[in-house]
Image (cartoon, rainbow, N blue to C red; front, side):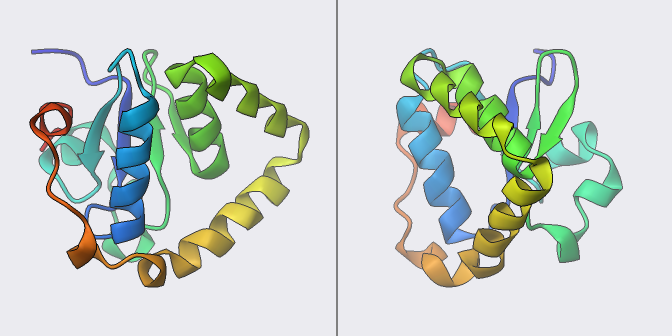
Length: 134
């Protein structure tokens, strides 16, 4: 079995999160990232229970090659760094204090379920489905 690394964990019941994952998939030309819902069995195997608490599913979690976990704005920066190319330039946002970056992230997260309806999300393509873990 492949080691559990380079995984983007997201709220699988959120339309905004689903759309965000599709966007990341579209820019991940090397297809090295895998994706798993925070409510799934992969998350159970790889993440501490505190990160899977149903009342706390307000963040994206990225598990890198070394097993380090990143959340919120730091996860977004690490994911874009991994995607590479132009997207690596988003590392510049690390000059901002993490508290400010996460405050902004939290404001979007509070409204995410009202931004895009999960029912409006299309089914994943076979290529996308191959990169989604249970």
